Image 1 (cartoon, rainbow, N blue to C red):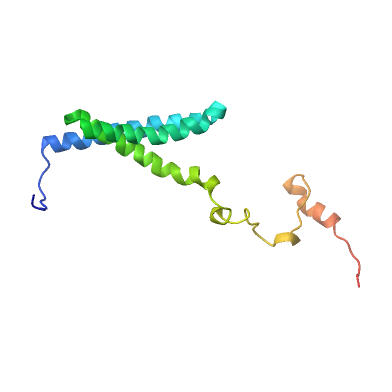
Image 2: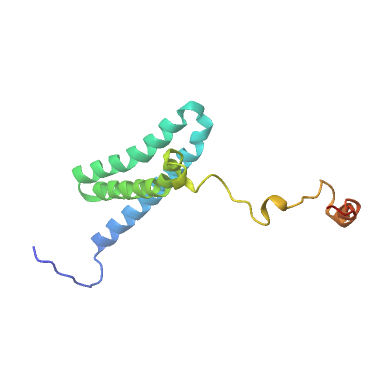
Length: 143
């Protein structure tokens, strides 16, 4: 088989393949996203539902694409592509808890600003902040 590259107007069959693949892939991503977003409400079943959905959908799509032909095969290709896209998008957040602390970004969130020496005003309305700050000023000398 020669490795040719040709630019031409797409035929009806090719446009149909692309339309079916994109349509089914979008619907797959939507359905998979809904399932994964509902999984935290299932309690102990959350990891099973999340990981099961993320891994099973692309595998079913790939198997269907390999063993069928025509429009059904194109639909399974869309399922495999949509499922793989959702898996790739979700994988970093799902793997992060299992990584060592250094790979997760250190010990925790860093405080912005002056650090330990930052004084915070007590709770109250923002309009009275200058008066509160003035009342808390202490005058004195320390040696």
